[in-house]
Image 1 (cartoon, rainbow, N blue to C red):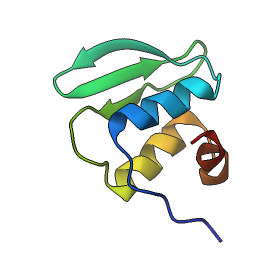
Image 2 (cartoon, rainbow, N blue to C red; image 1 turned 90 degrees about the horizontal axis):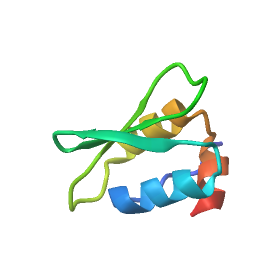
Image 3 (cartoon, rainbow, N blue to C red; image 1 turned 180 degrees about the vertical axis):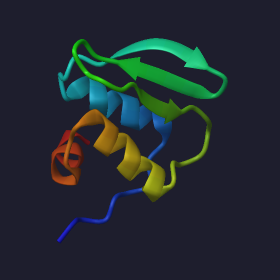
Image 4 (cartoon, rainbow, N blue to C red; image 1 turned 180 degrees about the horizontal axis):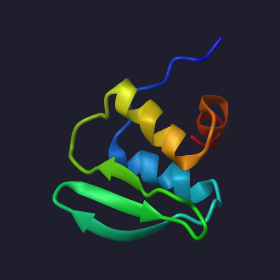
Amino acid sequence: MNPRLPALRPRRVLQALEKAGLGFYEDHRSGSHVILYKERWPNPVSVPWHNRDLKRGRLAEIIRQAGLTREEFLELL
């Protein structure tokens, strides 16, 4: 069973991805989104940048784009 994702601010999500040591780096900002890339990774990871908690569905999509499982992501928090 998948654990329920907590409500997180975008800054906390970016810190967790950096802590994962997967090699993601901020390439640019497009409007209110931070675009992350990684060498030899086919798709960018887009994280909305605002002062509200991310919705759980959007957080799940960010985790999927980064190639992590929910359990792996939760361990990084």
